[in-house]
Image (cartoon, rainbow, N blue to C red):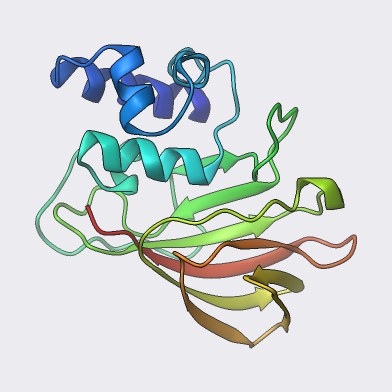
Length: 192
């Protein structure tokens, strides 16, 4: 099953378990019914911000969309062996390809409050750098390459070894700086 179908299937499963219609989930997540249907059918590469809103509307963590078999003990991920990769589109309305590849470092960890990821960021057109916000906090550490973060009215350029911690309620966008890929470690906290 593709990543898009896995995430979409999980959204449908959670929505139906709560006896919600597509329209009710769309309203609760401030999304369109069309977006929910396209995500559930795997016809759209998901964007992180709507997924956070959908997760909140369903009363689950973002990572729930990635979990297969929750476990209560520690979750160990060996170097290069993160099995759950999810590709996100960034924030473009009708994405054709993924700008972000998320490798979960805690998939299947039950009752977690943080979402740690390794994220490969591919260059994207400037017009796709749209600010978005959600409740919570984010920590980013640059492993390789350079990224640019629009945060409110400020712009921060980070290189390998740099880090930033911010409140994600402030409108922000994270993207590769220039035409080269970047790799970051990010930890996202989004309250239920």
